[in-house]
Image (cartoon, rainbow, N blue to C red; front, side, top):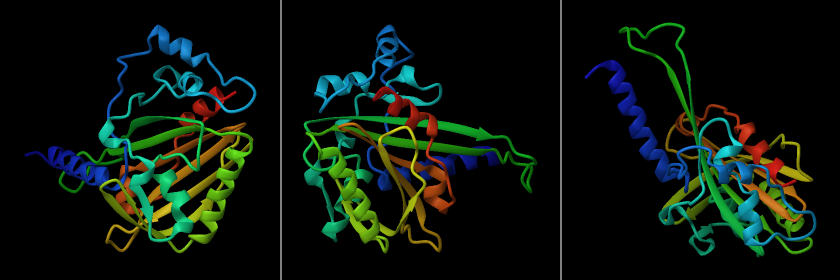
Length: 259
């Protein structure tokens, strides 16, 4: 087997391991391209006012036509759709973070929808490896998105609960999500994105049994009575702990559709 094939096989094995660590980020787009319905959806924005219905959330949720890169899955497979009662922590104060990591809505929303996005970029090598192998860097980013609409004041309270959890759980916690169990070694806050009424960004250091923790990120944006929660992983960063950026084009596209 060539060195390039070996490298790609190793990446595939790492991806399989990542699937056990990151909830509900798999799947493929159920759209072959931007259909006329997609384009119509892309022009939709959230109506002004209070809580959105499930049908209204569907109209303003991320669609394939909203992004130039990557694939949007609008129907998350049942095996990846973790329910609230399948998420637990060893510290109740950290449950809001565990729910966000699992793409489960906070509190008691009036309606909720899910989406997933996956994108890949390749950085050409400046030189070959010691044996002449291709050293192209492949970055695979995955996002699980939850949109949730709340009664008056509910979205603000949910975001406040997440912020409090990030402070109280700085030293980590253990989360069980479906059949997966993760030990979060560290929780830190980061610069939140703009565009919403308020937002929160959190980095989760994941104990993967190595000298360096893996890395996952959460971004939560409130726009009116709706919370958009993005649970993001990068294949390389999960294995190495290297810093990565949550794809801003995906976050911006979703927030823009919320009006």
